[in-house]
Structure formats: C-alpha cells, structure tokens
Amino acid sequence: MPRRRFNDAVLFYNLLMMIPRWLPYALACSVFLATVDFFVKLASNKISASMGMFLYGTTTFVVGLAWVSYLKITGQPLLITKTGLIYSIALGLAFSLVTMLLYFTFVHVSVSLGSPTIRVMGLPSPVCLVFYSCTNL
Image (cartoon, rainbow, N blue to C red):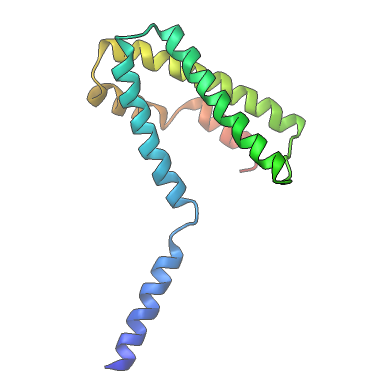
C-alpha cells in the first residue's frame, strides 16, 4: 500500500509539473479580457468612443510609465530593438482599433452576444496566421 501511495504522489507531481508556466498568465489574461468587455459595455452608452479610447490610452500610458520607471529605478535592464519597437507600435495601433470597435459594437449589442462573437471570429484570423507563419515563434 505505501508503494501505491508513493506512485500516486509521483503521478500527481508529474501532472502538476506538466502545467505550462505560462498558463496562469493566460488565465489571468482571459479574466481581464472579460473585464474589459464588461467595462466597455458599461461605458459605451455613457461616453463617446473617441473619449473612451482616449481615456483608455491615457490609463495605459500611465501604467506603462509607472512600470518602466520602476524597472529603471531598480536598475533592471530595459531591452529595446528596432524590430521590437516596430511590433510594439503595431500592437498599440491594433489595440486602439480594438478599443474603438468594442465601443461601436457594444452600443448595439449585449456583452453576452458581442464578446463571444468577437473572440471566436478572431481565432482563425488570416492576419494571425500570416504573422505566425512569418515569425519564428
């Protein structure tokens, strides 16, 4: 019986170790994405899309500035390359369009219909497939 308990413990440990290290971040990201949809829906009828996007951008800038400042103050390295800079700018433009389109979408539809539709339609995106195949990820 002790041998079986040991084997069960080893099996459980191995199962835990198979959980990728990125999974907790992905789970937290999914919670925050749902939160974004919820708050955009609440705001969409109470603020113009342009003002909502401006406030989103301002908030994101302040949080990013605080993070970079913390890293700089604590002496941690800040890596930047030309390619990284270009991709980061493209990311910012893409998220700006996402924010604007979320406001436009949620003015006309509920979160329970709009959010899953947007997420499912984004999965097989040709843009993602092209970028994924063009990069060495």
